[in-house]
Image 1 (cartoon, one colour):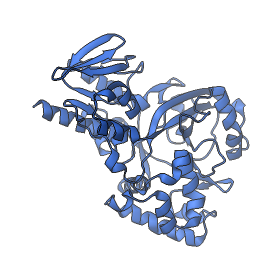
Image 2: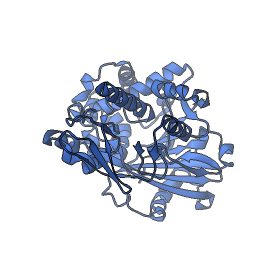
Image 3: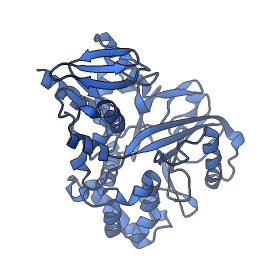
Image 4: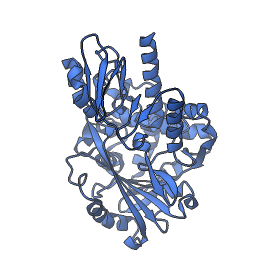
Length: 409
């Protein structure tokens, strides 16, 4: 039995209709290193639906757009002096080659980058990017989080042999979710949508009782896959104090994602990082600079990405208020942009979207096997040292399945 709180399964890969085609509410792609996801897609007969396509990355810095992410673009990146470019290139290469997370676990990204790349790179690139991602906690982020993102992306580029290639499933990643749901049903299971779990109880050596709006049912084993805060709300009373305290110490930022359907292109990039603390959002992803717009009825798809804490007034603002806040900055990037270009606006919020990884994070990660026998947890806060993503959700699910199978004998 699978209880799904939303009207449809999929979590952060739930979709909406964009020009007659399903499109993820939050931007997604695969790297060539995402072998577990590809293996699952192959098992479900969907591997041939993954398209590996080139992408182009840019950065907004110093009041203008720059190509970014390649050696040539680094040479042309004027906001960074030549000495800073050399240090940036050499240290990035070292990060891509490093295999052991230990040297990066107990130092902040700020400390490591200032030492190895210098003040100019920190001030020009990393400080504003981390500020956009983690707000006031930007200076606390562990270098291990950034190291793994850089190393995996570098491995992805090298493995493709053709520069960066990213993967996208024709028809959206929703197809794999639907295929998984169908497999559960064909195996005798059931997926109950629009059915959030309200509470999990357990009496001594008896079974668990899972309570929903539809009533309560007994289960021998329970796997919880919700964010940690929700886990503590529905099952925290079962946990020993130390486990509860460690889980409560893990913090995450929320995601605010506005998707614009436009009648023309907005920028030349698939992915644009905003290295400017004055902007109210942290990135732009023009999906149709990667996937052809004819799939979406000729519409251009622009994601406006924003990570922030839930007490930020913008998180609770109306879609109209959010767009009004964004428009001046969108015009800075493209002075020709006009609201008349907008054919549709979609506004999505996820309360837990990015774990805040600080030095020593490894020691606070909640275990897959709870101290309560047969109560398991698989959530994005446990993905480490990699960053959360579809591939590592698959890995987490496989690990949970193996643990439950082993414990059931």
